[in-house]
Image (cartoon, rainbow, N blue to C red; front, side):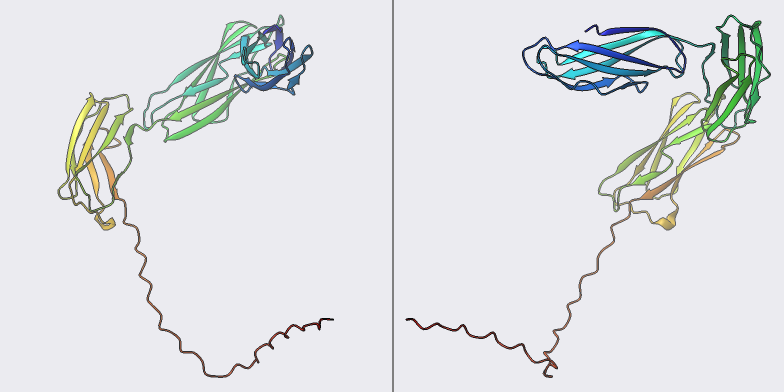
Length: 336
């Protein structure tokens, strides 16, 4: 069996069917125990699981070209009961051709919340056919993004620029940029825009959970503060409103990363009513104060002891129901 299959040229979005044929040249039955593709775009069919000596078997595969473009190569791992070759690697390769190539298909952004700066991503659009192609102005379904189209080579190459429109709140924002074309092969081009918004100031963890009290020994816990905004900040005045606790502030990366170490004393017990917290000051205009709540693991609820019940006196009132009759005695047969 040739482990490498070249499927040649395939249209983008099509499914390529491939079948590897092999012969059992050994003297014992060959059992193919597994066919594991390297990714989800390649799916095995019903392969020959047991092949007698001298007989042939097959391993069918389906490769979904999906959004691939240009040269591709995939691998598949085959396992069997052959002690000399328990594992084999199959490869399939070829070229995926698209009438209109869009690269990349996604515009990924990582903006910072509260930042006024626009981020831009560029998408290249190429007409691979011999015919002309014109594009209409791009349309965007989310106001958090804008799109601008530029022609690099008439009828052939275009450049799409997608930008974010701040401000953003934390979380993920998605939009779709749609362009209509005169190509019958690709009448519509769609590009996904995804903004994964980072918090301008990240506090990790967002709260401290102290072990159950009273603490048997002194305990240290840390909090990391990361500044994702474009401007450096100053963090100062660390404090904790719990008696006996100590707090220490360290600057790990100037203006960007800080570490807070809180030391809790032996015997510490925190009640929910205390509203314990670590507090710090910053020069960030949107986050002048950082507060980290402190909680303590509560004690498990105690199960109340069972109260012994007094013995109930036996009733002297006769029952309304007579006792069941005794079973009849067995009858002995006379011996003859």
